[in-house]
Length: 269
Image 1 (cartoon, rainbow, N blue to C red):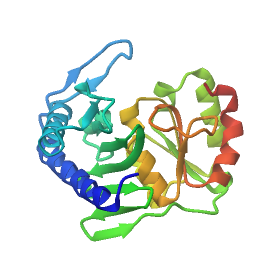
Image 2 (image 1 turned 45 degrees about the vertical axis):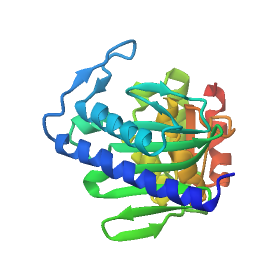
Image 3 (image 1 turned 90 degrees about the vertical axis):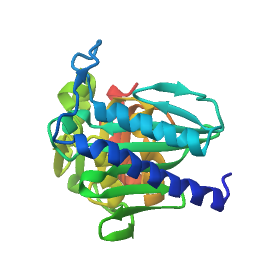
């Protein structure tokens, strides 16, 4: 187990990493961001100079402050992924939103200890927000100060506000049918929010996010953040997502999860 002083130091450091990455990213937002297409089987797969530069800066600071820690990042791969402490990075989650000038992209930074996610941060520097947390509690650091985060409780699926990134682009045919079933049962659905939607579940404005095909860096930062706000993250069968991606449910409460899982069962891996 991490001691409270260790966790406090790491909490301060993850905020430092967010602010350092923001200094790289913000000058390139709504500017010449150096767009490239990684291509591959996924078709258009964009990456920008901001993605690469931010991850490089985060890695530099980790090496400087914690040279024995490992790193897994979307842009530069793995370095000592079996270390006791491993940072999991997505410098710009929502690159498509970034290149479109929409402030829905985020910087996702998670920390594993002995294989389990223990600390996470979701940062949106254009609007001055860092959502950070661990199992002991989560908070929003914003321009107006800090406040504790708590999920919204007592909301049935019929009254829920739900989200996913791109149902047509990210779901296969059975997954799309499952999403449509949940959407038909919910009150309101929003699309295209990427990792920012996870922060909104922790903040109590969204109730549920359903995704598929995620990598570890897409979701791992959100696991401790949601835990500290009273929520949970599972796969489509209701099992803990741990440090893995794939089919993912980010949900405010267990009763809401119990309502949603039957809609997802036929499409679950």
